[in-house]
Image (cartoon, rainbow over all chains, first blue to last red; front, side):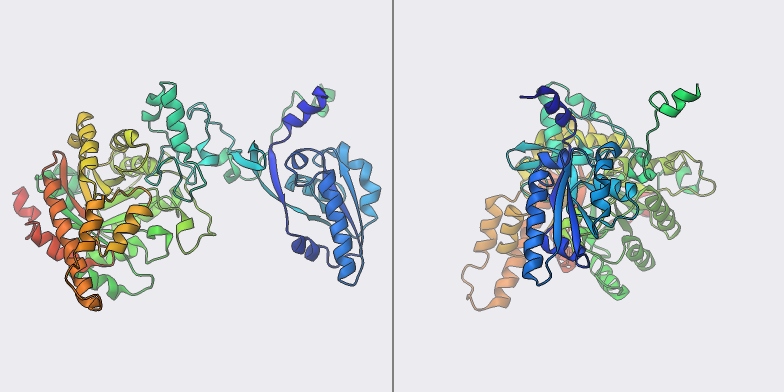
Length: 241
Length: 332
């Protein structure tokens, strides 16, 4: 096993996505004669949604179905290691600019990276980016983080109520928790039951007796698009010193 | 300081005054219509007035769009039936909740019940975005802060008249984890809940167990606990509540009683069967009220006869709780 490659993937397998229905992708590229499906070798490869294999299968499906529909499209595919970094997408610039439409099988970040880097290219999404999570068993992925920008896992036994409670309660559980299951459906675990059980097993239930104050959502999406600037890492900053 | 706070009451609501005077109170519940028809409210007021001390007005209950709680509450104020406006965290953020409460107070409302709210997936707009900017415990804190500190949630000082609400909260003694439920109630009391209305109780033994823990924590001395009760309409409803409603515990005994209520009645006589079921549902509720009165720390009952407000009169009369006391007489 290549440990270096595996750990690089390990850091980057948090975004979970699903491929859009073929009909929807077909309608997105209906006007085009030529198309390029761009896969991504990171998160969406690990969750079997948009890697090399899926990009190849989608390109073939689009070629075949357009032929059956009476106007054969020329659909090719290529996969880059990471669609969300300029250095990985720059090498496919020529391929991208040669086609009428680009179907990105990256997450929403990948789609936007292509669209931003190649302003003349028409880029459409082939995936629905679902959530940040992990596989809990073969074939099952579950949400774990909502990127709220102010982590409270230290208060909740390492289980996130923002991502995993249907009502994002900070003082749960609500009255709808029954037999460990959330009121919304029998398949969803009650995050607050999990939190209670965890803290109970560690003799830390007393932590739940404190009233947790209102959350500052300004660090979440509610504060507008987010950006992190680290002067210690910026090249320009270094040069100007 | 307002007049009301001077004479020792937090809000001066009828509900507060009766509870302070030691009366065993009765609150009712009124579900607003899924339309803009004020007469529906007036008709329901006619069924409840005189048989309960105040009536909850639900806030888009089960996430189905209905006339707003405060809008309907205005009609109750006009009709002289004291409203308890329900306020959920599902549909409003902290700005909207505070603003709505200022308006509700100006319109004469004095009681508010702070709830998280049923998830929108249950209702008729399941694709809606929910809010949950704050939860029910934080909502209690916010409303209490507006009243006692004259401050908005942000910490900004309120100039002029502050909304002085009698602040309620819900408790589900039958939700899981069962052993944590009294502590969650304790959090609501710590946040400042003046009164508590519980989820529907059918399993008295389990509720008594819950109340034992509540007394152990001394919560019954810090807040008024109203036991939630509701008449069963049919064996089908009893089974549905037993099997399908999260957080409800309906013992077999009551399902059986609803089934046997129609014994001897012709299967085709639908009217008689319906009447027999309803009488049995009312009878069970009357018995439950009597059992609630024997539990130390229960300060009243909250009778939920949603879409069957006619049942409240026979229940309250049957339980010997009619006529309802007059708070002026009580406090003099």
